[in-house]
Length: 143
Image 1: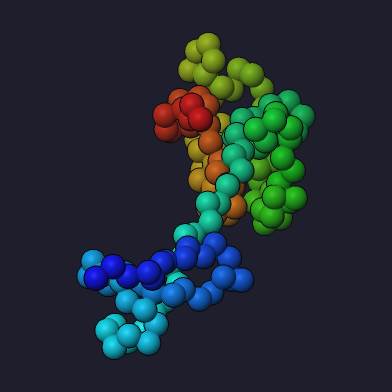
Image 2: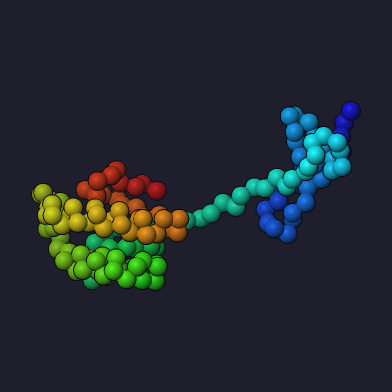
């Protein structure tokens, strides 16, 4: 027997009722003795998480938007103490400290790796912080 029952996919709270729900390969109407309840089939919204690049530089940094603009740490919601550590570390930037041509400053790089982990933890779920160079302890992001 063919049922005229259809499942409505809800993408917002405005659409909170469904006529039926699939159950073990069959569909049942509201009020049907089997199963006892009917629920909304929801499709979770696809969250778009902005990407920030971690890269120290002269002046502002080390967090940059996808458009190449400086991302101010406090405006991102970083705790003040972490924003201060990040700013202080970035203020110590000199090109020779990165292993662009040679070994670079391994103490500076190690501090950057720790800061990167702290920033990611503080921004989890709100921003994706990526690197584009291998010396941050992970493969470069090619997004």
